[in-house]
Image (tube, rainbow, N blue to C red):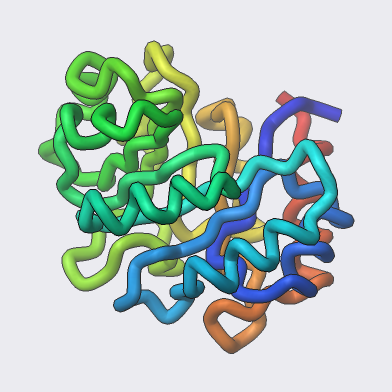
Length: 209
């Protein structure tokens, strides 16, 4: 059994959160981008997190968010990590003085390794499928040959992952963690499927490196 972490993103209710944890998830992601189909009101997210067991990382996802709004959410003290999914600058991400992940859109003409220099304070980088109409949760994979080798920071991979392809991704990229949303849903966005979560996490944890 390996130590690759699993983040279940797009949590919208307590039942899914608890099932994800029971299945072995290491982190839960809450989307605070109102245009997303998986948007979760911060007050509701806070109420969900209050009922979770300890030692689970809670990640708040933002897309070019208003700084005061993000700070108000931080002040509620229920997040462990911020995830910036838009065009935020390094200075903006660092200005909260809080652990953060910077998302890198997988574009062929993008110098991914440059991010580790520009976003020096990032705790990790998350590479996700680029879609001009969506910020994550596309259900589409990207060209995995774009994944850099030996990046200076921990690397998280997202984008169209499911129980059928995640082992291949792990064998290729050996990431610090994988992030899944639509791949553990069976139809309705924001509602997770217990069987899909269980099989996905089992596939990740028992993948041979």
